[in-house]
Image (cartoon, rainbow, N blue to C red; front, side, top):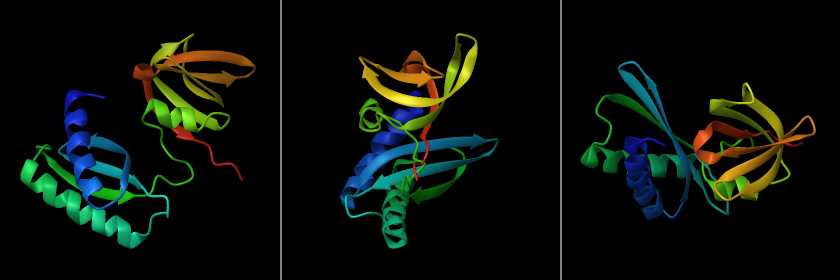
Length: 151
């Protein structure tokens, strides 16, 4: 995560905590002059639309004061959902033995996309099994990872 995203995450995390929810992660999607800031929240009792609206008001107020995003942006607040993105090493550990889709920043063995069974974590890396082969991928090399819903 870049320096701006780390600062942004810190500001957003404090704002979310005030409302009594947990920050699952943030996603800043840049698209020219306009960006989208997605804030994923979690709570043991689940997340409702009213919860998202409450957190959105709080985060928006804090971002207006702190002003960490210099260009125009849209704020979206939601639950991580069943196909949740994974942001932190402890989130990967919690989803061991789940199928995930993963995209790396730099190729590993000539590939950047992986779909397989998350076997766990080792130090600052995750272990994923794809086609009976295990890959150890440093978390810093993960561009995006998402849980495949299991029904």
